[in-house]
Each structure stands twice: as structure tokens, then as C-alpha cells.
Amino acid sequence: MGVSIWQLLIVLLVVVVLFGSARLRHLGSDLGGAIRGFRQAASGDEQKDSAP
Image 1 (tube, rainbow, N blue to C red):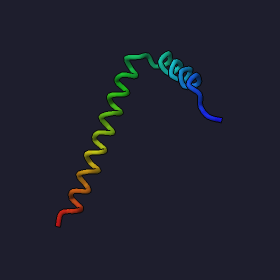
Image 2 (spheres, rainbow, N blue to C red):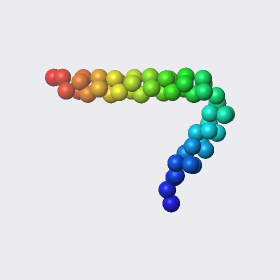
Image 3 (cartoon, one colour):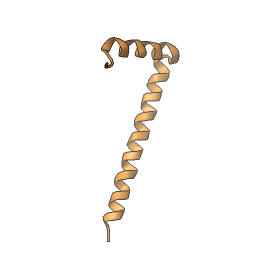
Image 4 (cartoon, one colour):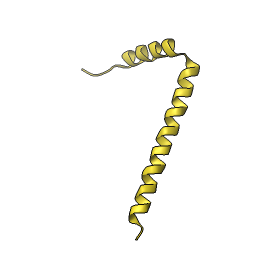
């Protein structure tokens, strides 16, 4: 029993109605920035560990 495309569309529609498209756009950019910062921090830690 998987998730169909119709179920995903209904959930997306409910989220857009509840939060509004402008707030979702800001939320998405904030989430992207957080992921980017995490990746930079993770790669920076690896470089520090490999240095003698």
C-alpha cells in the first residue's frame, strides 16, 4: 500500500492553503540555507581530520 500521486497533491494543496505560497517560499529558502551550511560544516570537519 503505497502513496499515490493524488494523495501527495491533496497534502500539497492543504499545506499551501494553511501556510500560503509566500511563507512556503521563505521556508524553502531557509531550509536550503540550513542544508548548505550543514554540508559545508561537515566537509570542513573532514578536511581538519585528514590534516596531519
